[in-house]
Amino acid sequence: MNLHEYQGKDILGSFGVKVQRGMVADNPVKAVEAAKQLATETGTSWWVVKAQVHAGGRGKGGGVKLAKSLEDVENIANAMLGMMLVTPQTSKEGKKVNQILIAEDVYYPGESETSEFYMSVLLNRGVGRNMIMYSTEGGMDIESVADKTPHLIFTEEIDPATGLLPFQARKIAFNLGLSGKAFKEMTKFVTALYTAYAKSDASLFEINPVLKTSDDNILAVDAKVSLDDNALFRHKDYVEMRDIREENPIEVEAKAAGLNYVDLDGNVGCMVNGAGLAMSTMDLIKQSGGEPANFLDVGGTADAERVEKAFRIILKDDNVKAILVNIFGGIVRCDRVAQGIVDAYKNMGDAIKVPIIVRLEGTNAVEAKKLIDASGLDVISAIEFQEAADRVSEVLA
Ligand code: GDP
Ligand code: MN
Image (cartoon, rainbow, N blue to C red; front, side):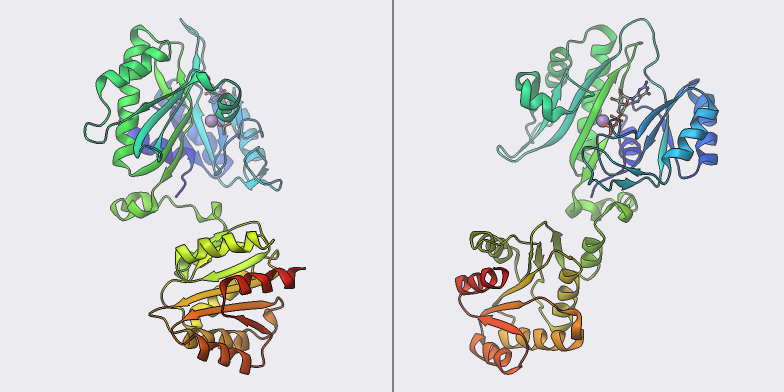
């Protein structure tokens, strides 16, 4: 589950990570109220107004604006709320801005220069350990740093038995070129950041930029946070942070129906039981010249109702030109699934306008094929996996 910047900063704050302070607002009146309150609490007289959408690169798309007066705050809030924000990470339609974060300006001038660093905590699957990735080249997009100057990105692996050790936090602060107060602040920052990551069962905390202020404080100015869905049962308060407006509506509906569905870009809709079979079905579709339009695991109970729901969800994607149903009958009997397909097809009437190729193998596969062939419906049945994929490429040709 992905979070908004303001939610990520709330979590960071709760673990003692210093963050740029801010308040969220969904209308210009609240935005001005927030700015006034921040001025009282922090003494700031400038603010940044930041669009809250699940996409990065907002600065480049006009989603981060500096306000030098309350009037600026109001004007920016008016313009930003409700806009479709286009950034390098959104589609060309962009994402609707429902909320904005009013934050204190932390780039004020002072004794020393400000510096922007990059820091993230994530799992390195290659070694099975969490790691901290960091760079002096913060603020800009880290992908191009990785591309052009990879030697400027450092990593620090964390031993799960010991957690982050003090010398590692010091090493990071040292590699970032810090000394004195900023060095100490950075070690505290890193330590608290790693604790936040571990304790919140996150899969990613990406802070870009981490800012060294002109008075040598270290702050999180941005926060991109993904939480592990499988651990959300331990965090009831985080569950409420879900913003389904930011999620793919078809995926939200599928989830509510208990289907594992992931939207993809191709033209062949897939309905499969079991995640492994779904993956190999997608591979075979690709090998046969098609492109999977989705990943869909209907799970172990492929009854008529579920099959129908799955069809309806697949058909919401206009790119779908054919549907491949690939079910392996183990505990679930193929003839029951076949009956489910026939029933769904009848119930849905004219809704199904694309060819359906059905491959049922396993328990009662022969009976299932008979059922489908006898139904008189426009369903192509196959028993071999390759045969099914070939039928798909035929109908696409
Ligand atoms: P992103 O573009 O979506 O990654 O959004 P960020 O939160 O990282 O903000 C983008 C940029 O806005 C930062 O790299 C800063 O340069 C700038 N910015 C953020 N906060 C402030 C602030 O308080 N004052 C000023 N002057 N600039 C800021
Ligand atoms: Mn950023």
